[in-house]
Length: 111
Image (tube, rainbow, N blue to C red):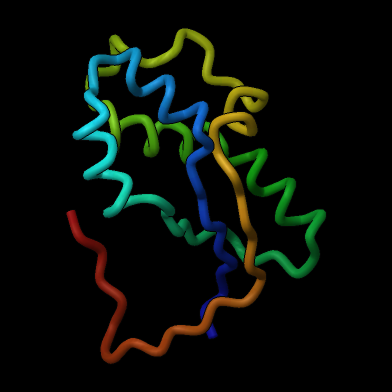
């Protein structure tokens, strides 16, 4: 068991609507949705749902930046205000307090 919890970030239809305003076509968005519909982020270990909520609120800016960059790398097209309210409208968050690693070998970070 890892000393981490995890959150799965999903994308609300309003997020995809915003992406269209940045110049991405329905075809590009559709192709990417099939690959990256949901993303798992490891976060500090949390035992209780309240802790998980607090950690997500502390880390939302980093998650937000990563999600925006993954879909629209041109930062000039990002929203002027990327606050927690917008984060909760554009993304769904599902938390998991226990993370088990069934992989073989050491965990490696890709650049």
